[in-house]
Length: 97
Image (cartoon, rainbow, N blue to C red; front, side, top):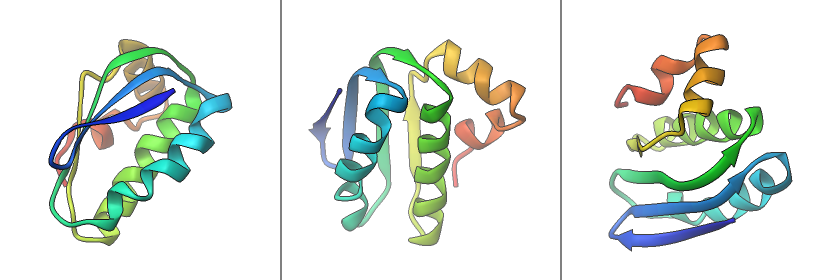
């Protein structure tokens, strides 16, 4: 699992975003929230997700809201959108804070 900078406050995730990797990404991503401005996270490099990925995305939204910042998601995998829909959380992933 990797998180790569693609520009100022833009990041690309690659690999599997699952229970086995989400903790590592959470720890690494906390640095992203140290700066200012809005964040954009691109999921086009994600190969597999599970429900822990949804928890991470919702936590990023919560953290951004606390810091009066925005976090936007691009190319969210269909499987993750499906999990969010079943959990009544899909709107939280797509709305802009």
